[in-house]
Every structure is written in C-alpha cells, then in structure tokens.
Image (cartoon, rainbow, N blue to C red; front, side, top):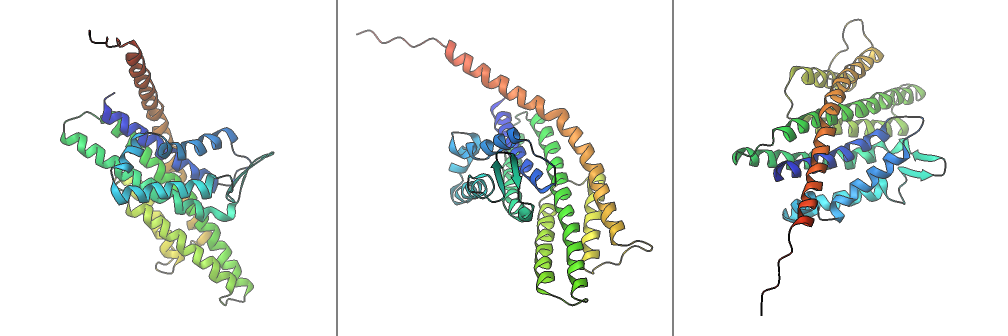
Length: 289
C-alpha cells in the first residue's frame, strides 16, 4: 500500500467514526457501550497524536485551525465527560433524543470537510499517476453510506417534527403558538441540514438521485411548495420516503462492508511490515576515531 493510499485509508476510517455518531439519532433499546468507547477514542485521537489528519491540519493554516477547533468542540459536546447528549451510566449508554440537532451540527460539517480533503488527495494522486484505485473505491462506498445514514436520521426527525408541529397547531385550534413556532424552527434547521448534505454531494447515479428527489419532494410538500400526489396524504409520502432510503441504505451498507474491512486490514498489515522493517534495520556503527 503506497503512502497516498495509507493517508486516504486513515481519513476514510476517521470519517466512519464521525458518521457512526449519527447512530445516536436512531431510537434503539440499547447501544453498544464498547462501540461508544471506541468512537469516543477515535474522534479525538486523530488531533491528539501525530496522524495524517493532524499533519494536514497543521499545514492548512486558518482552515486547519478551524477544523481542529470544530473536532474538539464536537468531542466536548457529544462525547465529553460532561456531555448531556451521550452519557455513560451504570446501566448503559443514555442518549438524549431531544438533542439530535447538536449531533448534526457537529457531524455534518466535519464529515464534509474531511471528504473534501480526501477528494483533494485523490485528485493529486491522479495528477502524479499514483495508484489509489482501491482506496478511491472504498471512499465512494463510504460516501454513499454516509449520505444514506444522514438522510435516514434527518428525514426520520423531519417526519417526527412535522407530526408534532401539526399536533401543536391542532391543540391551538389551528393558530400558531409558541410550541408550534419552536417546532417550526427545528423543522427549518433539519431542512437546512438536508440541503447541506445534498449540496455537498457529488453522486449522480440514478438510484441515488431517485432517493434525493423523493426527499426534496417531501420537503416541498411539507413547506407548501408542492401539492400532495392525488389520492395520497402526508403519512403516505413520509412512509414512501423512508422506504426509499431504507432500500438505498441496505445496498449501500452491503457494498461498504464488502470493501472497507479489507482496506483497513491492508493498512494494518502495512503498518506492521513497516515496524518490522525498522526494527530489523542494522544500527549504524560509530565512526572510527
């Protein structure tokens, strides 16, 4: 594995840890504590130790400083010991599902920032005729998986908030109320996050675009910019959007799992080989007096 592929693999691995934080935006009976601890370690170690990401940050001036600050703030608010979003208790990991927006606020910009780094390294490798095809393949699978997870969680929250908004209006006999305004602000924030994910996406295949179009149509119906399809109501279109995302994520996850572990193993094997080569290298003898 050449050096460019090694750097790409470590960055892809980091983005997987960041992406998987969105697991906590899904309502589950319990969460794997060991995986939580590993994600917590992975998020910060890349800027605490001499890693490819740390090296890129240190050579990126003000933009690098901003990214490192964003990563540290992400760690503190979501994974830190004083976090109110994720809290490790004696009975397991506790997740405050009222704070999903805090997770999106941190995860999405970091993910896209590192994605931009990865694209830059791939482009540079191509210009120098360096073979990074395998890492590039895994990056594409990883990016599909990230978009799928982001849409699954964001659209799930959008649907929930839309139901809560309508209930708040119903409770107020159709009028706006402090409760409905508060929920409406959260809906606007979620829509902004969805548009951020869409706006930074480079995927153009028909399957992805079909999912993206369904989500866009759903948002337009919710905001009054598009009529509901004839014979359908909001529960129908909300359910169809989630079903489309679930179908996409099923295939995206299978493709990702088929190539990601192999790339990580190749990196580990390369690191081990490099370490063995260093330990076996002869020690230079001291010059004669």
